[in-house]
Image (tube, rainbow, N blue to C red; front, side, top):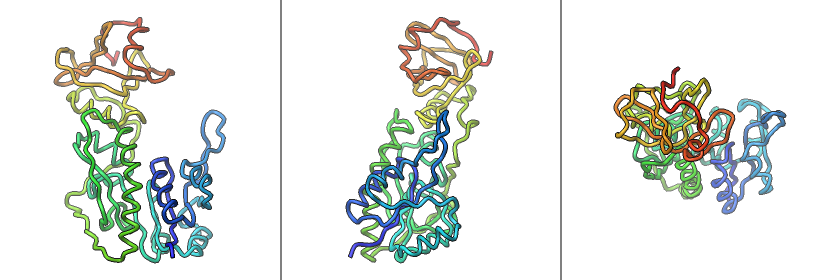
Length: 308
């Protein structure tokens, strides 16, 4: 008999795993967040996982809160053997303890490093050379459960948040299936996380995204990579927000921190120890563009201070 599996997730990151698990085992139900208003018309939009589940013919449950009694009773009636959680909410014990065999989460870091809502972003921002995925048994404290399996990947020098996000999303399908197989075998041991080496990965807010030009160039480039393509690192430029999506360190420009120089071929900005050269950006009210396209149409001051 195939196990009864309930899948919980919301964004597109969870879709490869949802598809793979359903293909191999079948999924009894998908739990995702409620529809939310989106765009100028504020029309209700489905979460990405809901769209996928409907296409696959899987029943969808969208509780407003995880402690809603009707939701808990509905989930209990499914008698799940395994609950899979990827990019979802914090679950209370009343929910994750309903699984007969185990409830596990797939987290986008090598736990105990980068516990929290934005592990991929912070790994890149902090200049890590590797990251990965961890499957772990759920417990009440967030991202602290005993580890089942891990998969590592290398972070390339120019990899952005979007690049690593896509890689880990695809890899999560394989790790989810391996974890289910392990749990079904009953022949496995878990490894407790070492809280002494844990590090946080809090949610990204706007204040994290504004570039501090008094920082070293390498740190600023890592911030840009870790927030690209969204939510994007930004600076002020002629009174408007300028999103910087890609850049590299350059040593030939000697500019004061926060001062810029624009030529026919380059947009450079000074940092604490060197300068960065922008290769992709998004001016306020416009689409993202390569630096060549921006420079072709630029008619402003060729040099100045971003703060003025």
